[in-house]
Length: 475
View (cartoon, rainbow, N blue to C red):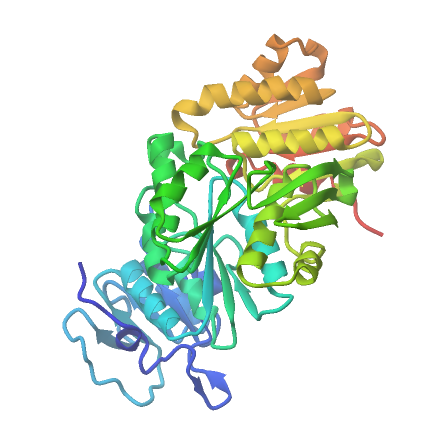
């Protein structure tokens, strides 16, 4: 392992966010050379398919002021080699970019991010789980923003490679940071927690997502549990009371436990749930002696759990109900499921970001609540490992109950079609194609006026291409 590096070792005198004059010397940290802009710092990460070192010249051509590398790449720039000299004599100024050489770029940047975050007064809320991380992050951010200056993980930068560079966007003006944490294998969330020191940890639910890499459902539970294990004794673990695998984590955290769910046994719970289709969902919140009727602009009954998680974060962070409800009703929150007008005035429900068994079932439940004929366009669910067949079969049985027409996309999704047929769905209403491009002309033919069309699948199936092709221009 490389010698311990600090923010000062790596970024001094770059000092990414120490203002010199009217602007920072380094404007931001990027891992994609195409994102490099003048005064940025480019991390040359070695990935499975690409080596960032190959793109150092492009990053510098786009204006990067510094690059972090594991070997010198260019001769015409200033080179500072931290592998051999941990306390180099940095120049006061230079006319050319600098390449900083370290033993491990990813690890060095993680340590720099940890050092930077440790200097800030921000309180961190970490969120993980198999499903619902991003929607919970967005809504919790909206809730906390009613009182605090709140940072949130940008986009899907939630991994051990993506989150550390994003932390350099934090500045002393932020009071709260809502950070989404993802994993492929055990140890990754523990590392993220080590870097960010969360005071609050939110667990959504457990599903066999990424089981091909994790190996088993037990490994997924253990990996997600790393967040609550890392919480301080005066912190709070916010756990899903309706999920036994999540509630089992209560015995593995030194923090206080706050539960949410649809069961009155939870600290915060909801009932009287009514889906209003594209107009949102209505329900009643209960906490201690408080009882509130709430309507929020979220799609589907499953989104009540998202609202509960965000409300729980608000309560733990000391917000009043007026602030929490205002945040829950924030229509500007960037939630995953969006709608568009499709052919012949149909409604496209675009939930194409990703797919797991639980999220697909939730999406089908939303489709069931919508008016009109129901068309389900379902793609492969990837990285399910040994749960692959059973999970697709489960979705097929539910699709038979909800959909008037089922179109599957991809080889794995053919299991959905087969199971729907086996459950009694008429053959003429079940179609299968191999790719998104094949689905487009087929849907243009079969979609009828006022249909509700759900599109849901893993990102590898590229169903977003179908949405782009079918969505009608606005205005």
